[in-house]
Image (cartoon, rainbow, N blue to C red):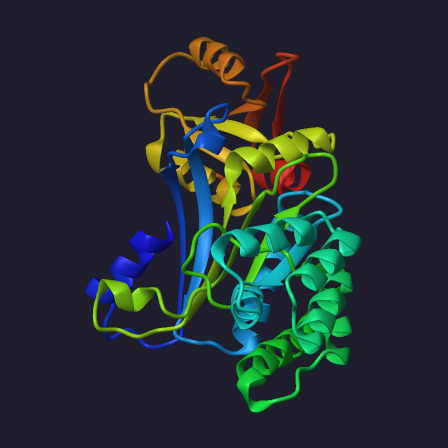
Length: 342
């Protein structure tokens, strides 16, 4: 959904105050060989933060991602994070051709440090780049990047990218989520528009990422004249449900009481419904003018807890019928509210 959002920003929100914070929930269609055994249409929920390229913006997105996953009930949430431009620029600095780049990425993904070292020796990597690749491949936390730097003005861009990871680490520490974020130098996205951090969210025992995202500072301008940095993430709803099921999560049953209010006096009944709803009760008005017996039958079919019959004034007792037990009693509405109110 990033492309449609980018198009909306450029065509319908050119004067919107920045940063722009957007969210969406929508069905997505994706055709890929990797989806042959999976649904090509799925529901996706995501957010985009447009118009800001600070560590605070990236930190906000990651904090929101983690908070969202926890809010739906998932446990042991983990974020794996890399830097799209850092790996690409290092590979370019090493002067590798396309096939060699693929080989290095494969070795990094497998965490094959021995194979990586052998490959670099065979392909005459500069010593400083060789050490940078090995050190970055061993890093598991963003803070560990602090020990890595490249000397020489031609590596200024690479050093700034390393510094951006350290600044992000400090932001995540302020959110107290830095322990949930792991650095993965090999992590890049197949989608080419990412320019900064890229990340995936996961939980144990699922085998697939729940979603992910990253920074894309040069993408929105492709849809118009606006040159805006942006970052965001997307989650697949189906995968969230799979993860919740795998973790034994059960959707809690609603504990709110359901009540039908019946009366020959509409104004009094409407007032009773209003008071019940204000107190957290799921209340509805009997609008078909059917008999009390028929209302009780309807209440049973709709899993209603009580039918409340009110007279011409709420200052008088109301009659409360328990739909399950069919027992009735007269009680003041205030007392009934104290018993069932939310």
